[in-house]
Image (cartoon, rainbow, N blue to C red; front, side, top):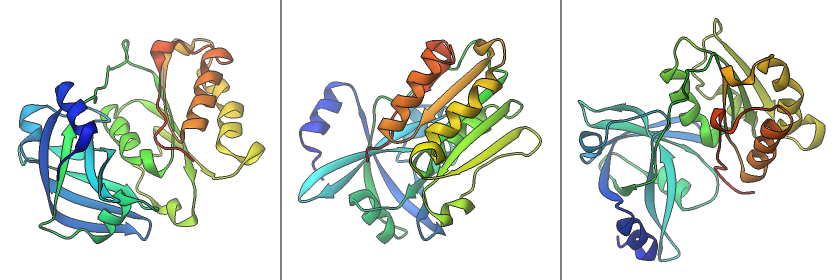
Length: 241
């Protein structure tokens, strides 16, 4: 599949193209699917890092359409990893619903990176939803001995069972049903997070990836109201309402 003008731009920005092949399909829930794939040589060229992501290419209305997905459990020796899909309407979800072993998908690697906070944090403060679940899990894996508080927005009752890799001894998981106003994710995080920062916010590291509006609101709150230094905060809107 030709990648159109977006693909041409990514080429100019030194994007690397690969083709993944589906080897296994797991329906974690009716709303969340995991596909194991071979990497087409990606991991031999670029070592994996936390929150590592690629752009997958889909056809939508006869045109190429790309969306970013986080690598799950990358295995450089085997040349494999998984991709997880929080299903809704759209070309990516339609492809994931119908995928079977042997199917292929084009991908471009460009723009991914993870500058590790220095010094290492004493506590992780993670805010996300099903779309950012793979990245949250990769951060928990990358800091196995670090305390973490996770606010996880739950859009649907089935999402209560999604596989967050939390350890009760070190991780505080706070599921938040999707809602507006005082019952929603923004209100919960703004009410609960400042106490966790303590007297020295620089010892923590906050990572936020929700819908764009929520992410912007919480990022502004952390910088202006909670006095978290910019270098100790990563905030990226994963999707738009």
